[in-house]
Amino acid sequence: MPIHAQLLRHATDRPDNPALVIGDRVLNYGKLHSRAGAIYGFLQGLPRSNRRTLELPGVEKLAALSLGNHIGFAEYFIAATAAPNACAVIDPMMPPKRIERIIEQLSPDVLVVDDDAGPSAEIGRRFGVPVVVAGAEPFDGGAAEGELPNEAEGIFLIGFTSGTTAEPKAYYRSREQWRRSLDRGRLVFELEDAPSTLCPGALAHGLALYALVEALDAGGTFHSVRKWDADAVARTLSAAEIERLVAVPTHIAGIARAWAGKPALTSLRDVLTAGAKLDVNGVESMRRLFPKARIREYYGASEIGFMTVSTLVGGAIDFPVDRVGRAYPGVDISIRDPDENDVGTDVPGTIFVRSDLIADGYLWGDDGQAFRVTEAGATVGDLGKLDENGMLRVIGRAGGMMISGGNNVYPAEVESALKACPGVEDAVVFGLPDAYYGQRIVAVVSGETMDAKILADHCADRLVRYKIPRQFYHIESWPMTSSGKIARGQVEASMISGDGLVLRLSA
Image (tube, rainbow, N blue to C red):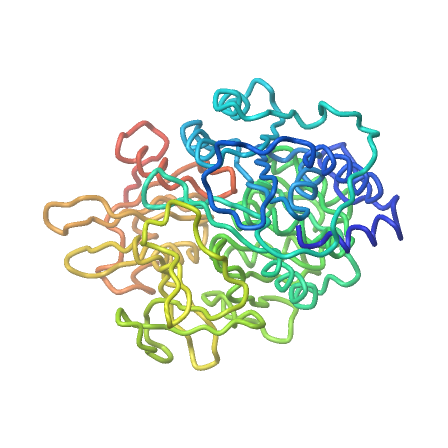
């Protein structure tokens, strides 16, 4: 990890300050550093896998973590990213077949789990990978510390994103990229005074993992939960007087429901969202729930890092809700046509970025449909447009485009319109096969509004006619991915199968 020097300083200057709090487990900076040192020494003593075929220049030991939100996650992540090591972070909630493919291709020197009887442990043993259960290590917890290198270069992190097939794409990042990002972020997000941060997402995913690292880099206390529980998160925000919340909008909507009718959470000074676009109703809900907080969102990708950041409430500029802000420091954004010519302002096209925060590439799984680097810059295939003030509006992913009656329609645009409707909490839009239109646009919404005519009329005020959904459905509770996003595939499958998860709305 690119913050070992900062960790040593925090452990030396304020060893008793809490670094990590998950549920009722607390780990202070002194213990975090000493435990990470002991684990580092253990890792250095492991034999190197003789089955690894991946080219990882400069990497001596490769550890894979399939831990979930375990109190030991930070200890192992710090040890496993100290040079010359690298760490692969695997979501234990992935389907076992995906975990199997990852472990088979990685051939790590060790696999760290939190459940010795879980799928990850079983898969690791089947491939002959040494399996360690966090909290039940095969070494003396008081063993002499291995020396944690303070400065290093090279690969330190391997992460996984979904592709157009079932094969997860494995990207890798260098310490230099994250060091630059953290240094800028400390100023952009005003972390110099080490605010307490809560992020309820899965640490195996980019949003929560980065929130953890930036909190430790600043010397603050990072709070999370073992598994997502809106009531538990709301209680923690109140009882611990959390100053900063980092979450996807769906998590924040759950917190608002859980805390309905209770006093506003006035300790929050900053709320940062990402992973899905904020909408008018969501912002208004947050204004009521966090009246003293500045509400901001950022737009980025695992492979590219930060692209934009906005200030919606409490800042010098109150950004329009349909924009994701201006370019992050050190980032240049352009909108380009299929031939990669710059189209200028107020014209839709593919979003390209020039930045020194971009990942090195993929170890495997590159489907050619998303992340690529050309002379024009880097892109993940998202479509958008810039206004004359340099504010970016994200329209959607090219691969998600629907063609209805010969017209191009992007789900994100229709979803944004629906989420602005009073009484709508969230919305998902799909294109289903249709003999006449090619694709029939349908929408699934949650919230109090359950009248298809109201929804259609609302869309008619904001969208051209061919973009208005032809069918509306209602859902009481969204199925979620482990990263806190709506499981769109499950919603679509349920709508097609008629299993009762969604209800067809009538006018």
